[in-house]
Every structure is written in C-alpha cells, then in structure tokens.
Image (cartoon, rainbow, N blue to C red):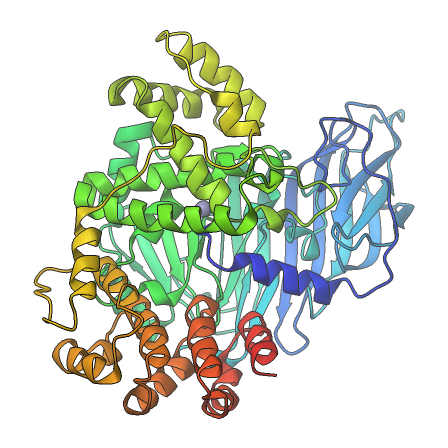
Length: 618
Ligand SMILES: [Zn+2]
C-alpha cells in the first residue's frame, strides 16, 4: 500500500461497522499466533476458496457463498473463521452439504466476530474437507466502497471497490484473516449487465454480455490481497503482460501516464528475480478512492490523482509493483511485522526509480520522505515504542502501525545494511531471500536469522540490528538522503523577494518543495507575480496545486485564486489534497467559503473524505 491516508479510512469505517455491543473473546492460545485473528490454523486451516457472489448496487450488499477446502492437522472438532458485520444464513460441511452447527461469537470492537464451525475430525469416510458458508455483507461493510454514479468519472453507473488491508477482508468474506494464512481462490461474480468485474486474479479484458465473470488465483495469497472492483471499466494493453483498466473516458490518458510499466517490470526482475504473477495490470478507480494505491496481486488499485498528464507520480506504480516481491510473494506473517512489507517496498521502489529515471530524481523522493520521517519521530517522541520497526499492535487496530516508521525507517535500515558491503553482494542476498521464501509469510525474526546467516556472517560484517529493529527513535548510523536539486529549489524560494527563479527543467517535486519553502512573510503581491509567471493556481499537477493553495491562502493571496480553489475541491476526492486546503481556508477566516464549496462538492466525496471535512468545518 502506498501510505497516504488509508489509516483514517480503516479507523472510520471500522468504527461505523462495529456499533454492536462489544464483548471479549479470548485470543488464540498459540503464542506465535497472529493477535489480529481468531483463527487457529495450526489446528484447522482453510486452504482454498470457491467464492460465489452477486453484487447488488441497490441494496449495497454482496450475497452468496464462500466454500472453503480445509485441512485438519490438529484433528479438532471445530474450525474458526474471522468475520466482521456479516449476515450468516447457513453453513454446511462436506460435498453432500450436511447442515453444520456453528456459533458466531459476540464481536470484539477491533477484530470482529469469531465464527466457530463444528467439523468432523474422523468419520468412516474421513475428515470434513469442505465448509460452505451462505452469507450476505452489510451495506456498511468496512471493506466495501460503494460509489454513487455522481462519484465516478462517467457519472452514469455506480462503482464498487474493496480494500482488504489490514483486517477488513473479514467484512466481505468469512476467512482466516491473518497475513500468515495463505490460500488460493476461484470466484464467480455476478454484476449488473453492462458492468465489468475485476479481481486480484486472472481478469477479463472485455465486458461480459450476461454480467457473469469467473476468476482464478492459483498462487497462495494472504487474505488482505483478495480484491474486487466493479463498474464501467475498460481495458487497454501497454505491453504483452501489462495493461490498464479505467473508466472508458479516461482510459487513453491512463495508458499514456503508465507507458513505462513494462520497463518497470523488467527492471524489477533484473534486481530480484522473475515476476511470478503472470500479468501486471493497474486499475485507476474513481476519484472517490481515498487512498494512494493498493498492491492487489496481478491488479494494482490506484487513485486517479496519479494521472497528472506529466508522468510525475509514477513512483506509485513502482511502489505497488515492488510489492509483487515484498508483500505479495514474501508476506509479513503478522501486522507486527508490517515494516517487512513496506520498508522493503520503499527500498525496492527507489531502486526501480533510480534505474529508470536516474539518481537525482530518486534522491528527491528519498529526501522528501526522509523529512517526513524526521517530523513524525519528533511529533511521536523519540522514545515512543511505536517507533520500533517490530510493532506491538496486539489489542489495537493494526492500521495504527501505518506510518513513516514502517516505510521510511524500514527502508533506511536496508540502505544501512546495503552500505556494509556492495550492491552486487546485497542484491544477491535480497534475491535469495525472495527466492528461498516465495509464497510464504515470514516474521521479523525469520528475516533477521536469514540476514545473520546469509549476509552478516557470510561477508564478515556487523551491524546494530537489534537497536534498529527493537529500539526506539532513529539510530546514529541512520543514512541521511540529500538532494542538491531540492536544496536549490529551497534557495530559490528564500530569494523570491529579489528574483523569480530559473525553473527550466524543474520536476513537480522541486516545484512542491519550492512552494512549501516560500518565506512565511512573503506577501500577496509577490505571490501574484509568481503566479502570473508560472501559472501555479491552474497547474495540472494536484500535488503542486494543493501545496500552492495551502501556502497562498495562508499568505493572504486568496481572492484571486478562490474560483480555481473552488473548482479543484469539487473535482478532487483524495483526502490528502482536500484537508490541507479546507484547513487553510478555515484558519484564515474563510470558513464561509469553505462551507459553501463543501456543500457543492460533498456529493462527489467518499465517506472517508466527507466525514473528515464535515468534522473540520463544524
Ligand atoms: Zn506499500
């Protein structure tokens, strides 16, 4: 997942989904068990899913069956699934569908409800090998984003997308919802005629005439990676094995923006071995998708705000592609090991970007995110246990672990290790980590053992590994990224009262840093002059635009730009861009304007964005 504001989505929707009375349910006794799942897969485990669902846009529900092929190594008489806010109608066991006894435990406010199903450990015919659950989702299921037609690009048909990470899949599929439990799946999905369904699986490239679609994922994946999108969707190939899905009216722009996808896959393969998933496609969702991107296998889900018209935000695609190795191929065993998904991926993303777009470009990305890390550690306190790489999220929502620690401290840990030897040795080590452990889920400790044996000992080098992984704050040997391009942009901003800068060849990253570095005392007249020269108010890049609006509004340059701010807030749905602009308006005495614009725009926002702004403007 590309970080961004997913945290807030999960927190808000979980709250909404868990209004039933909360009750305690004892966690599994296995000390190595995932604290965020009730399942006990060491005893009885679900290995393959046959999913049959009908998508009902009127009622905003999915209805059908989840049939699980199970194994019972513990010879126990029950199997436990995770559920959250599901309407369970009936459960059967075996191919002859014998009705089963089951018990849905009262919900825990974070984890949802354990579903305990009685199975037969030994019968003359053998063990129970199939459990079929008949169920429906609820309209407020935490994983499901139902978009009204007004929230789509085409404005004609509604749209549905799912978001499984971290523990939301249980709100649309009863499953053993721990990233340590992998399974394969097939699915039959029925949608209204005229719409297309796509999943994290082998996908159609054309709309089916009867609204029925079949899917196959024959590689074992973690539950949070099962994903579905339904809407007015069309496909366009980029290369033999890469392509894009989007609403038809934006398809060509999306294909242009992501033209380098094949190059990225080849680069990634040259670093860490073959791409194991067959196709790599990206679907661009409606602007109501309130996150950056999600690395669903074979089909990355992405925000439309990366389609900038200048290919300046394609690092998001590199990030989600990198997850095809770190995250999807080798998966964090629990959410306490989340840094292994994200730290590896940020590191890997930079290597891909550097190989394709050069060192200077990548230095800018690293520098910007390094500053974000410093800010976050400062605001959380450097002794805060949440600054450990290895998380301790038991009893809390695992999305509390989403932040710069897992992403940036995690990535800099790998940079530090890389610098102990040289790139060929380090790359060979990483490649062997992925190759040795592919299609498995691993703990932090599994990685550290592998690191000691196959890198530190092998090359006779040492590192303060425990301090990095189990210690707070930022170790003294933290590598510090530096970008001379950003330093120049900053200098230009500080000199703005004297001279307009020479911006020839500037990337959006330099622009954003320049805008954010404008002195607090620069006046409206200076900003107006700047705007007249560089057209910042109407920039096609949303990152530049929201940064500029935030800075300009706070320096009193408001009246002239308000119509453009208005249009921007109506068009864009991503919370990351909306909140700073609404906040700037509110804090500078323009709350009436903010409310007026919000009233007009809110029909196009996802609930995540809408709720946050409503709260802000109260
Ligand atoms: Zn990620």
